[in-house]
Image (cartoon, rainbow, N blue to C red; front, side, top):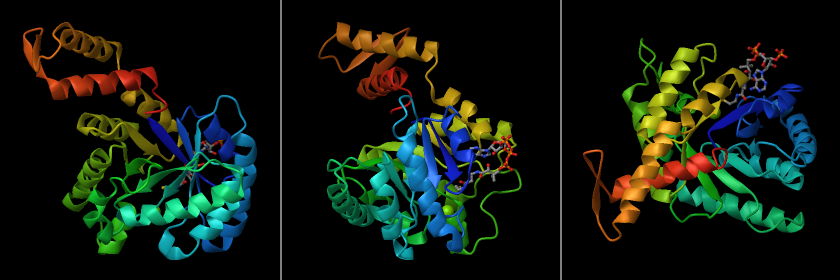
Length: 293
Ligand code: COA
Ligand code: MG
């Protein structure tokens, strides 16, 4: 998944627009974009929309962001949306592997009552939204086979820390949030799942989006959250390997295949070793299935 576009569950025709946006995944939000008194109506809208949307033949992945476990609202969210068969649940304010074990069990019970295969519904966790979560970012490995990606957030974290800002005057994330970003990346690599960069909230600033997306790709993220359809194309482009990158990766794989058992090879006068081979293989996998990985 290169681009994952949020849309409020009570967003009316925004839901259809999100489906047509070109995003690899649409995240129907029941959490922060829905006020407490509208949660119940939003659950119904989400379920109604999903019911039909999952049957479309060519469609993005369909996810629902439920409310955090600690709110006590997540069970009612799942009761409402699991019968409509979302591909995945996004879990906000996740606090490590223990939370995943809980959500895994909640999903398993509901899959059984709704005739879904065990493990049908995957999980994307937002891993840095509380102070405690930062210390638990390394605990996702092995917690649930449903986990397909980790992402991070700076807004809820700055609120919990009592910070007045999370970016400096130039729009660059401050140290605490750069740490959160790095922990997400490392936690995802340790758990062998996809790392997805956080939202660029200023959706009119396409230059800032491009800059942040390029930096994310450079550092190892393979996708990014979006809040507006205008952000989708930029994100998809940045995370789609270019023909030059594909050719380079193929040449590297071919060089290793020509010398089986060798730990290092030279391509165009540069030494490459096994980690480079692994990186090339991953790039080729992403080139083959850009919307999946
Ligand atoms: N998904 C689908 N369509 C969207 C969209 C989204 N996330 N955001 C905007 N659009 C649509 C609008 O409906 C509008 O359609 P129209 O031209 O037919 O009227 C078009 O894109 C242009 O929208 P624009 O006027 O630029 O923005 P807006 O003021 O309507 O909406 C937001 C701004 C921030 C309210 C909106 O982008 C949004 O709801 N984003 C998601 C918020 C969210 O889910 N947050 C939780 C995660 S952090
Ligand atoms: Mg939030």
